[in-house]
Image (cartoon, rainbow, N blue to C red; front, top):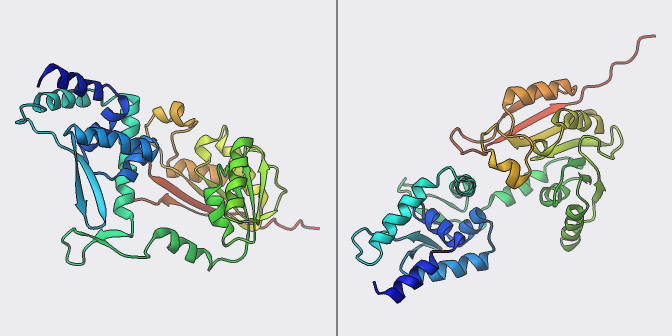
Amino acid sequence: MDVKAATTLFRLLGDEARLRLLRLLSQERLNVSELTAVLGIAQSGVSRHLGLLRDAGLVSEEREGAFTFLRATPDEHDARLGPVWSLLQARFDAAGTDAIVREDQARLRQVLRQRRDNAETHGGATGSGRRQFVPGRSWAAWSRGLGLLLPKNTVVDLGCGEGFLTLEVARWAAHVIAVDRSAPVLDRARDLAARRRIANVEWRLGEIEQPPVESGAADIALLSQALHHAEDPRQALRAATRVVREHGRVLVLDLVAHTEEWTRERLGDRWLGFDADALTEMMTDAGLVDLQVGPSDDPGAGPFGVLVAIGTRPATRARRK
């Protein structure tokens, strides 16, 4: 390799995003959408970086049916790039404790799990492992269809964020009250609702520990990925119980207890998930009964498994005369 070519190559590798791409693609075949989800970089940026790496001979494309996957092309026998790959792999191996690398690895496991669970690509009937494309099959359509079977309830979505789940709930609910502590986030949620022409959502600014919702106002209170952001999860569950009427339900979806400390700084998490016993105790303390608490994922699903829990607000006992 001459000096000019070496300069070009090492300038190419002097970019954090491209090194992260190479490290991921040295482990797994991934498509552009999957890489975008892992890296948190716009798809146009990922595509640009991939084009440069492909031109340098560091990445190649593989087509499989309707999908295009990319992978790194390390070859220790390549006289030009073999020594470079040896150096890169040594650095990748040494970076395992880096916060950014740990975040990439966690997201990669999530993406691979989603790929495995995606109903649009599944193993063939013969068990060959080949992926098949099934037009029209999707988990989103399935969940929306199930939602139509539910009664026209009033739902409170506590910690609604930018409203993606809120608007899915609004497809089947009679009315949704969505609460979040961030005014800019609620503004984005309102804009999204307007673009989708969804008008049965009422957006309210407030904390989930003290939501601006009347007692007994709802049939269902939803806490989806909100408890691990709460300053006081126990109080948030008490508040959720308060806002549902007698025999109303509180539904919780949150992270299973994990050890990914980087989520505190990078994602603003206050709690590293919850184990089933702790969540059961907090829901009981909030006054909920008929509890069902358990993981929604198979064992080994990665660091960010989801815990699903539901409880019922009991009827108030009539006072004796």
